[in-house]
Structure formats: C-alpha cells, structure tokens
Amino acid sequence: MKRAGRLLLATVPLLAAAAAYFALPEPADTADARADAKAEASVSQQAPPPGLAAPDKKESAQRIVSSAENSTLDWRSTYAYIEDIGDGQGYTAGLIGFCTGTHDLLVLVERYTVDHPDNLLARYLPALREVDGTDSHQGLDGFTAAWRKEASVAAFRKAQDAERDRVYFDPAVRLAEHDGLGTLGQFVYYDAMIMHGPGTSPGSFHDLRERAMAGADTPAEGGSERSYLDLFLDIRRHAMKSKNAHRDTTRIDTAQRKFLHEGNFNLDTPLEWKVYGDTYNLP
Image (cartoon, rainbow, N blue to C red; front, side, top):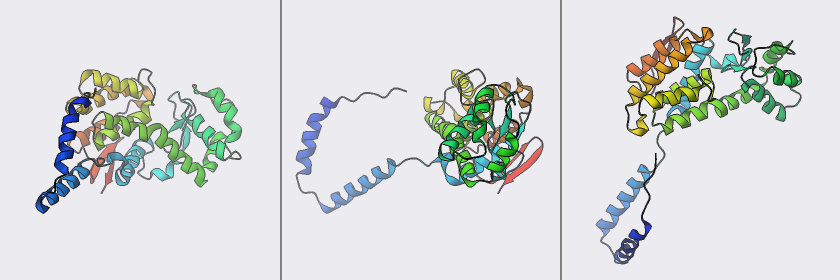
C-alpha cells in the first residue's frame, strides 16, 4: 500500500505558532494533562503484541506442526528423524522436514559445517550438492546414521532451530504481519511455508499467497481476515490434493480450519485438533 506524502512546507506556520505558545508558562493542570497525553501517545506507538513470535505461541506452533509432520507433540524429539517418505524429495529429516532434494538440508549442513568443520555430515557435502533438486540417494550411504548421531550434538540441534527460524518461521510471520494477519494467520502461513517451500514456483508458498490475494483482500487491504484465510486454506488444500504424498489434508480440515471457524484468531489455548485421525490437545 502507498503512504500519503506529507506537505512539509505547510507545517512551517504551525511550528512557529507552536514555538510561541510553548514559550508561555502554562498552568499546572494543563502541564499534567499534557504529560498524560504524551504518555498515552508513547504507549500507542509501542510495537503491537508479537503474535506467533511470543514464546508461548511459538511453542504452540512447533507442537501443532510436529503433530502433522511427525505425529507427536514433542517436537524436540524430532531432531534425529530421517527417512525417505516417497514424495520425490529424497530424505526428509529433522524437526521441520529439511529435504535432500529441496536445497534446505544442504544449506543447513553447509552453514553448520562453517562453525563445526569436523561434524559427521561434512563429508557428505559433495554428494548432497549432487543430489540437490532430486530424490537420489547417490553417495549418501551411511548418511541417515550420521544424521541421527549428529542430532545428539547440542550445536546441531541449535543449528536446526536457527535454520527453521531463518528460512521458514521469521519470513512467514513477517509476511503475515504485512498482510494484517493475527496469530492464527501467521501460523497458517508458517505451516504452509514448511510444507510447500518458500519459493515462487507453482504450488510453492508464494504462489499460494499470490493466488489467495488475487481472490480476496487481505486485512491490510481492508478485507475480512476470516474470508481471506478461508480462501488461502482452500487454495492450499487443492495444492496438497494434487500430490499423492500430501493428499491427507487433515492438518487443514480438522486443525487450522477448525481454529478459524471457532474464531480463535489469537491461537489461544486450550486447543484441540485432529491430524491423520489422531486427537491432540494443548491445555
């Protein structure tokens, strides 16, 4: 959205008048009122609540994502997870499903190796570069065992957290805030970015967002938050149904859509949802 320009020249007489006014002594009650107004203005200019970035909301987000990605609320137990789930993206690994075929796993290992060159995964970097963009396991013999062992290292777990935030969580929250979305909308973006990737190709997160924005105004554009999110979830659901590995859309149907229809835009607990037929609760 465009910001209206300010006519600075028109403020000059006002500034001069204000200078003359404040040069005069003012009654004590006027000074008190002015101090109160200044305090209120200061409060109104403070940053809004952090939404999904608030520690308790972020914890809820990780647990809800983990219920869909790993069928557990204990997301911290998933650092060592690794398998090929047959979705054409090679090995899927770690707390949010970094993939050998989608570049994010390669970047994670590259960045981690800069500070920890002797890690168990470093020797697989040439092979990871070769298989990037494919579902191939060529040159990755022993990689799954190395990943599981390296996941016992605190620094590697921290690296996974940092890459999750840098590539997925922080960009999703920023974009959702830009679109005028609250905590639930920020989570909807985050979960979509994890599954569909942050790229711009058809079926990626940015493609889904652009299609939703073409069909409904965001809250930042004056639209209804409920209507916009309903459309975004419709578009995302269709994208999931188009791929065999993601045809189960319960993470939308009986989780995110449920929160939306309950009007829980702040993602407040208690929460109850279902994924793959299993029921989860956050008290």
